Image (cartoon, rainbow, N blue to C red):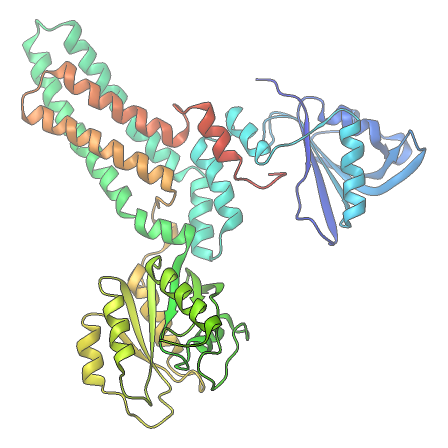
Length: 461
């Protein structure tokens, strides 16, 4: 498959030590040679693959040196895209790197679309679709665990499992075809039904195990939307600052200080939290605070985890009990804060309202109880023991949907066998399972979906 040559800046925009302009395509080396002046007249077309060379980027029309650079040359097929790749290492200023890119575009390259380098790696057979999607997961990973999951998928852990299952199905389909073509052999039919059920149960088991990781996989990939709620001045903003280790939220003794929703990503023992500090939920005459309270109620409905903060030094109020009522059926950790002050709260009533939810006591002022809170959060989602490197995690929503459909299709196969359905009818569901698994790795997927997936990538990747 031949494509034109593309180019883009592959490092974040802004000031930095180094910026990289990347080219990929059959003419990448030729185009780079038009603007590169190596020491002693060195030409890139003459150098060995996977080598780096010092020189200058030269604008021949203006007869001036644009940049001092190091240029890496990587020849097909042993590259990320399986095309010729050139990477021009410039100084990291905005003006500098943009001038180099513009000169490359004027010399015959086309500006790459978002994700087009990775898309070419997929289209050229360098990686499959699940591995390509893992690239963006790796870029966006916010914890070590999330990064390990993305690396495992990039290395083909999920792909190998899917390909193995598809091969198992393919072998059974071939056997079914023999049965259909030679129906006069009764022993073939009997063996086919026995083999078909055995394989279908095995595939059902593997897909079920894979789906069991999806909840934790999605957490690692997308993070947990975690809302801190409570009456004003119970310590919600102090809790946010304790997690973040910065004074992101204003902390005062004045109720109603937080007027809006404050968000921050934090890493709690490998669990990524999208931590949301809300305005204290209460009835108020203050117009601005009332808007903040309404926003708090909205994010509460969309949360994955609720951290309900109560004041150890206050008696439970009607507002506290209303909050317990509002979070029924959700994942909740109850935090009793300000234990450095004299006790007034009725703990028996708290336990009655909390039911089976974890209760953690803290004194954020004295930095006490935070470790226990972090352990409670980690245990709630990972039981404190699961390691990402030991498991093939299913973390992508598209993959989860396809595996769920494939599982349903293979269940239909098993049901059909048990009900004595003709084998050619059963084969339809079996083939459907094979096709759905193929969509996960991109063996059977529409061009529109491919374009949509890669459009989510950053420019230059």
